[in-house]
Length: 566
Image (tube, rainbow, N blue to C red):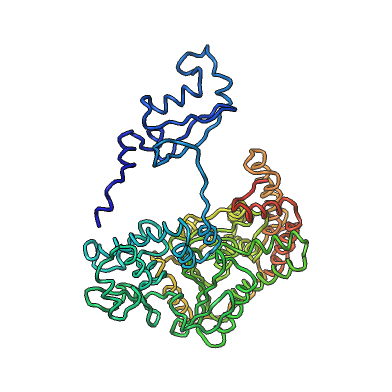
């Protein structure tokens, strides 16, 4: 098997020619200057002069750096543009890039589910499919033959690949997805030989490298010829392995019984965005938990917890000026987060990965948060021309009020929260989320191992229940600053605009956010209710949906995935 590491002839030729990549000016690709109106120069390995020197000769008639300041660059050279050439491995000559298109890739590209993408690529009937089959066959054969040379257990190879290279699933997990027996037959037909223990496993009636029993994941151990529990995972709760424990579901959500009278809600949408069916799932799960269980955990095991609300739906309603539909959607989101806050049983949110916008608002309203260390949490709505509309703006005003200390300056904490939201700041870890005041010290917690997150959240639910959890009371004593706060925040926005740190529209959005967080245009500081702030939040959110520049920002995110600064 180690013969596969022998360098191909073209690579040896490239090393001989010192075509080693960017540091030597060329490798598999080469950047050249093309004079305006002229073709790129193409060189082969038969050229005696360095290609870099030739490129300079072809592009420049003079060089101010080398010939003195009194000489000027050739006007044709100054109009030259760069072009990337690619190496033809048959002729060893550089030529223009040719874009390849394969039907298999076009079919797989829009598919979100990784397992389905792998199956499409492996089954492809074109050159791309041939490549993927060969790639996987060689990878499967090599990995299976390295047991027990580099690892005694196959799960260790998968864990190393995932941890070291950021793969979502490992080599043997991929093999299971594609069908262990089917792939083995294809490998035999292609004269690719995996380790003998793979056939022995199948002969014993074991059809996969991994299996799940009672929510516990096991791997095939070639030494014992049986399935064994992956060490250290006995206490993990992996929702995707608990399909026999589903107590309720809709098209976007599943509610699982995770034992000890605790349920866990998981939703599965594109980027785990939050739409109407997810909100329905949260409301229904709380109702079921209040009726039959001790508490609720909200979590999932996908790449990210949630990228926020369904921006596409918001854009569609806003573009078509369906303001009644928008108002209903915002009310539904606000009612859901308030229901989460005022449930009669403890609700713990266990985020990981991206936890943005609406996902962050879920965390803000939970009884507690049990976050994975690698959680990137923040309210990013300002980046798309909106303000947090699912109770996030209200909640930050409430937290600013609660942090005020008698005889202290009441604006300090409010200003910091305002800046975090106004700049769409996202924490680089769960630890930084404490510094950003999204997580609360002494209240929320972090799980270093993300696989322990749901189990830790479950323990938190049980602890709160055993301590005699009581439903919180509605708040009517939130102190807001009115015009005093507005003046301070507007002054800061003006300074940032004068320094060109923000655009005119950023300033406009900041003023709208300040209006909500300060309780509106009140003559003096006073106490208000949560519903008062929610109404302000919804009013401002709807007004921004009618702004052309907000629609442009929403459209940019949907079409390019990048924020627009207009």
